[in-house]
Image 1 (tube, rainbow, N blue to C red):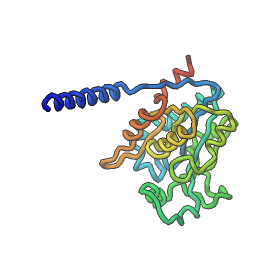
Image 2 (image 1 turned 120 degrees about the vertical axis):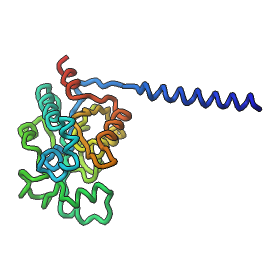
Image 3 (image 1 turned 90 degrees about the horizontal axis):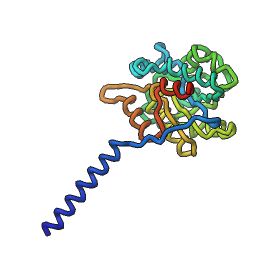
Image 4 (image 1 turned 45 degrees about the vertical axis):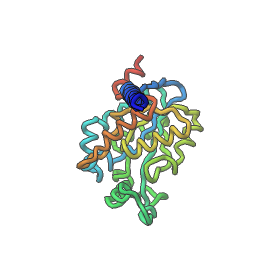
Length: 244
């Protein structure tokens, strides 16, 4: 009996050690940029990225630390210089979206602060310069023909917009993903795009997330990026990839 107990104990120890070793050496599948690769950017909008945006108090620390605003502009520049298509998945809330009968925690917060609000989906009155508008420094890229702005996503992921359709119609198989916010819209886009058959890499410092007392959204996002995506780039590493 003692021999059997000892064998079971040794087996458990070996299993724990082996599992720990696997996670200590988490594989990096890698990512090869080719003609089927596009860049997808979520929510490059004032309410997230401008100090005047309604969410700046939540995300500003992370945006500043990650150099997110500048790094996202670098992605636009790299895409234009290298013939890479960019797809923007924005976040808009219209008046009818404020009549929802139930919401998650962050939906309540966003609706409560009027984040990404637009008066009417058929009108752009009041859109220019609003919190829902794109950051001014990005507009000179977004207005060019290498950028496609798809329909808005409504919660966090792209399940309710036409992102996958637009990517498939352009024969895109691989995604370099970045934008706001890391542990919500970026992570949700990553998960859905993977489930939809795309190969996905993340530019970790071209994202940022809310940081609250006891909750570090950026740390959560960066952990899951590494666990789920094919590769996590820094902006500098991505620049080096294009300069090879």
